[in-house]
Amino acid sequence: MENTLNDALSLATDPPVVQQRPMLAMSGIAKWFGANQVLKGVSLTVAKGEAVVVIGPSGSGKTTLLRCINLLEDYEDGIVAVDGEPIGYFVDARGKRQRMGERDLAAAREHVGIVFQSYNLFPHMTVLQNIVAAPIRVRGIPRAKAEARARDLLAMVGLTDKEQAYPVRLSGGQQQRVAIARALAMDPKIMLFDEVTSALDPELVGEVLAAMQQLARDGMTMIVVTHEMSFARDVADRVVFMDGGLIVEEGKPEQMFTAPRTDRVRQFLKRYNDRYRL
Amino acid sequence: MKTFAPLLHSYWYLFRGAGMTLLMASAAVVPATLLGVLLALVQVFGRRAARSAVLAYLFIMRGIPLLVLLTFVYYLLPLTGIDLPPFWGVVLVLAFYYAAFMSEAFRAGILSLPQAQWDAAKSLGMPRYLMLRIVIFPQALRLAAPPFISLCVNLVKATSLVSIVGLWELTMASREVVERTLAPFQIFLGAAFLYFCICYALALYGKYLERRALVGH
Ligand SMILES: Nc1ncnc2c1ncn2[C@@H]1O[C@H](COP(=O)(O)OP(=O)(O)OP(=O)(O)O)[C@@H](O)[C@H]1O
Ligand SMILES: [Mg+2]
Image 1 (tube, rainbow over the protein chains, first blue to last red):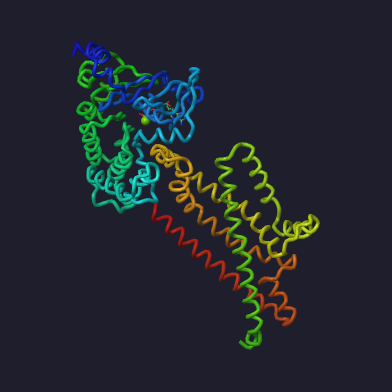
Image 2: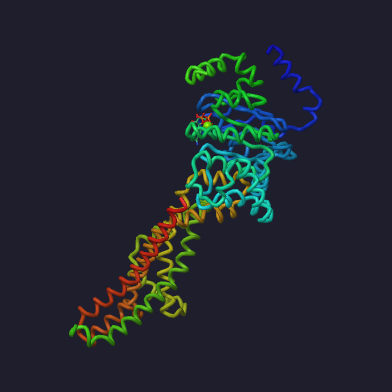
């Protein structure tokens, strides 16, 4: 694992990686809640097809970071680009940072799928309606085509027989898989997952993680905030550790979990291992 | 039965009065609802100045008894030179008055939706009008249905006040019949029964809406 630093450096010089523009580029994101600065200039780049897992103690700013990407949360400094296109803020010709208009913002958000801890399905719509609503109304896809795609996605997450069910009739794990299908139906360029299994009963966690693992294998670019270290180890191309509103360390999962460079990560993993006896 | 039987034709007269009551209430409830939704939207999404204006309006409407407002407009309207048939004048007063209360029901419905619903809609790239139309309103209206229905019941009962400015409806009809027949007990019992039927039907409908809302959630 000594060559991790070299790996990191080569990442910056390797021609194929550099020439391909990153799928996500966040730079210098700073966010205050009142007087409390919760993001202290976070920069993160995610390559196309890369699965990045974000770990870190509670309150370190992981959720806030994800929400800033598509401006669900406003932030005071920094900019974000998805596939080279700005989202939320852009820098104008005079170098001034400007907020996008609502219309452009809505259009930019189409490309970012986000799945929340609390599923957030629309309770007055069936599973199928939940999935096709935005593709039809936002992207203008014909209903028949949108429904066919929705059924494919439901098959992928193992919910073929549930398309006419209302969300209340589903288990948490099923709702969360519908939420994943709903986000995927927009054909996003990147998927964000915020502790999507932490509200689930332990026996339902596996089915949701399996769907996400499949997605990563299929080459989806994704950022996954999770406390599931085994998922991080098995699925992540890169693990990012956040603490106090900063990225403290990042690296390949093997390196992070076996030979962390910083004390903060060591402590965090030790506490985690003590708790879960891994 | 002896005391009621001779009054049968009078009951028919009351029935027509009830029809007028219903007509007046229906005519008022439509603009009241539209204005109520509009006021609620301004309160939730409007700019500061617009919000303050709406708040002032609600404050005034809530602070004035409907009877006073009716009488005031009845005497004021002719002075302004606006030539409005009394029926429509009364309908408008009812509408403006009840819109203030309805807007509160709609506003509460919109605001009681969790932030998460907005987040989910936004993250799917929905522009604001679409988000409101397909995600927020359908849920907010269901939440607002029970208080809305009870306001409709109130509105029906409030039409009884308009006899004070000389409009003919169920209460006025009852008073006329009482003057003729000198049977206040039987007549007002009949009027009360008719009011009750209208309001009870509305309340049942409200219960039905409420039950339907619960199924979706
Ligand atoms: N709406 C809010 N208003 C004020 N402070 C907030 C708000 N949301 C989050 N915070 C604060 O911002 C900091 C970062 O919160 P965030 O939810 O991003 O952390 P997290 O890393 O996701 O934690 P967890 O692992 O518990 O989900 C915390 O100190 C939190 O108290
Ligand atoms: Mg969080």
